[in-house]
Length: 272
Image 1 (cartoon, one colour):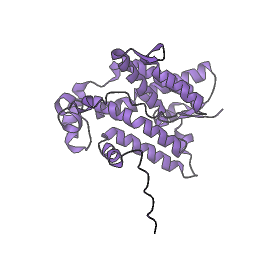
Image 2 (cartoon, helix red, strand yellow):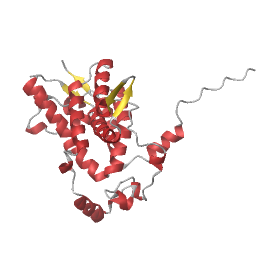
Image 3 (cartoon, one colour):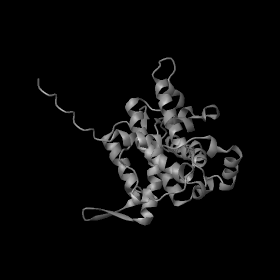
Image 4 (cartoon, helix red, strand yellow):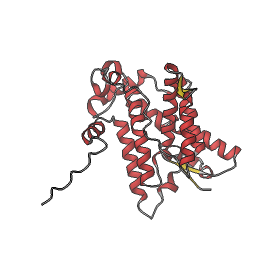
């Protein structure tokens, strides 16, 4: 009897993937769970989650302001949700590790969702007189890429492309253009709005929106969040470190400080 042929090796190490997922911080986990929950809800046919939570310019009023927060969490299909989750996870995980869980919640539930949405609505309604809807967490992907690009620019102003030296801060713009060319029905304008807010955040112009550390430390101490919540990251990294342990330089030594751009998600453009 012939010996069955051996299966080809997997392109990734499952144990490393599992180890990475187990170490994800709290807010990043919650975002991924909410994305999954909304996708599962969209499988039923009695109520359209997309129409309920999408950023639709003509549907924005005092009673539907929740759309300014829900649109990054809603997707139009499995692959849309999967690709956005793959793109968002390393970026959001790094942001939360550097800024803390409470700060991440305050920023992404607040200005890092509403500001790109506000600029998008202003351009769509006032300038373009259009009503194109958008959904998808790639709004956060490009926002974080914009912030990371500014940080990279400060230490490495240029990268070489043949004989040309291109400013590193332009990399999210380049990715935005390429994605819009290769993938149909994506929101080019939505991604540009997110990159703009990412640039402003990276340059420090939105620093006033970050909650004061004194207040965050008081909340953390009063509620004992670090002791009660698994995978919670304290705002005081110098004292507690990531996940409540002393900070380590292993990431820097292993060269993990680069901007993760292995995947680029898409912000789904709905309507004509």
